[in-house]
Image 1 (cartoon, rainbow, N blue to C red):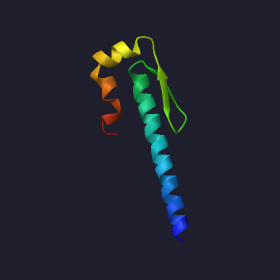
Image 2 (cartoon, rainbow, N blue to C red; image 1 turned 180 degrees about the vertical axis):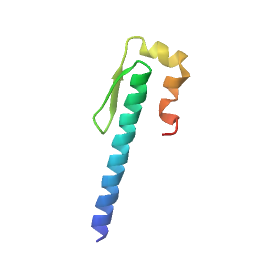
Image 3 (cartoon, helix red, strand yellow; image 1 turned 45 degrees about the vertical axis):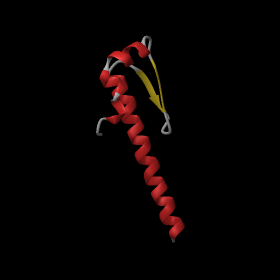
Image 4 (cartoon, one colour; image 1 turned 90 degrees about the vertical axis):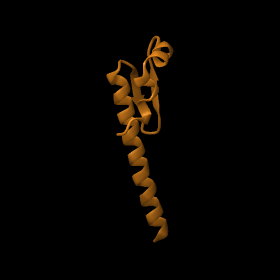
Length: 67
């Protein structure tokens, strides 16, 4: 029974992680950064992204904002 509870908790955690990563990708897209999420990570890129990251606080603290 404990194994089923652990498996269910892991499943819920993976689903929450995937949803949050999709939200981060959408927030990046809203500020003009091309982003894709595969459920386990977010890949992004844009020309001049490093320069924008240094000057735009929304990009620096994007993942720290509450969902």
